[in-house]
Length: 250
Length: 365
Image 1 (cartoon, chains in turn purple, brown):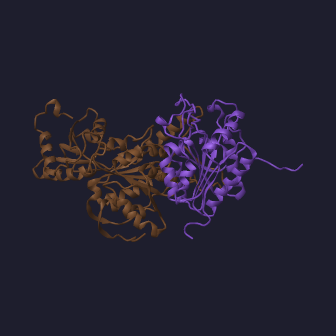
Image 2 (tube, rainbow over the protein chains, first blue to last red):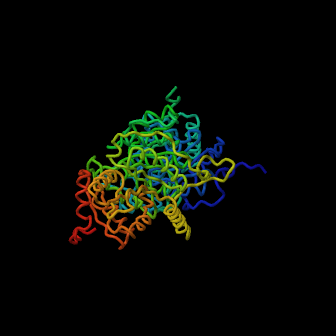
Image 3 (tube, helix red, strand yellow):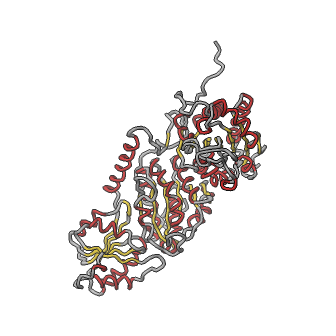
């Protein structure tokens, strides 16, 4: 029998702790596949953030550093500045990158730090029990927006990919989703491209991944999957917002 | 490295730290401008790039401490510097560094607080520095230079101790020592033998993947981790205490002071001696670990201590704790912005020097 699909080599063989229907598992796998594809496991250093992503070191068979909440992009920049020959990436949730860590995220992109940020956007705070995130949609009910997000109090959801794409320092900025096979295959290619940008020393790469959070959205796995398509993608369009063809210094 | 032989140069305290960092093999600096320590990033922004080092003026002190955390995790020597309000911003990062057992140098050239305060020297960050500063049960190694030469020498010690114990270390200076110029003998001290950094993140080639974290959720794990950290601090208390005693052998009154106030107090001690008073100076160099045992030993013979600080009462608590009830501890505090002259300190000495009658309760320490 021919083996056509297996767990990526750099994913450790233990069960994920994520909820049923959560898309973190898929995103983790896509990142692992990219690392396998380029055969960079032995020189990759991951920076774990705080949120459902915090257990990265349990899943990836690479050197991993834990960062304070929101600071992963600065921490990763420090790692890369110390060891330019390593591949460095962060995996940050919507609170980590778009709330508390937004300054560090913007300036990491602005400085054109040669790292890769995987931005896990599920529009809610998962680990802490379902509070509003900067990317929570208008009208969406969360534990801290029980009447639904109202722009008069909470402003509008932030589109991080579009914002970071406006910075000169960004080399590659994209948004993907994993809610159906077509989107998933595009996401796989895009994440792989982001790592390629780093390997080729083209600058800062960023992939926003729209994820379902059935538990905190109060939905079944299938409903949550549908919600990504019907509610999230219309506000957070998929696509590549910036793609530098040549490194800046050339 | 520019000059390995001893050269004597006239230099600012802040620059001495920057120079020492390079001489100690630290080629990575991350920081944010704040008065009165900007000489440090300015010096390093000029001298690191030609050496192939990394200099980032970060967007904030929060970014700076996290850049330091990341760089230290790779095993490279790295540092940041700031002043009081910026150090407040760094507390979270420092707590994470201690919890993750990461070395690194944080320089605090203290200014006046609280809040925006002012830019004149103060010693108001003693508590912040010696009590950890951030959340959780940890300590920082804290060194308090008193001269430009010490700004240089203690930087080496800070890096060595940080590496030896896998813990962040702080140089606690102030605007006075940072901005003053004195002759410096630029000579590298003897290198300390340090353990290899096999914990560092360098890429999991030919070994099991390393992980650096401070999160411990399994039953009993965090408790064990905290005891492990505690053991380190206990070892520091046993092995790393440093202080200076000046004319204490026959003293009837000893001043306890650190940093810039120790300089002023030293002159006061000399003035007092000229007037026939037997006064001495006890100067902690390590604020953590605090030289409590040495103070206690002194208190068996010397019954009068006068703690002189540029704040409204911080180190005096540690002095009192150390001597317990075996000596009287008085306090002369000058809040930030009011640096005393040696004569003013001498006047204080005269208030307490025997055979003056014991003062009213307000005058007691």
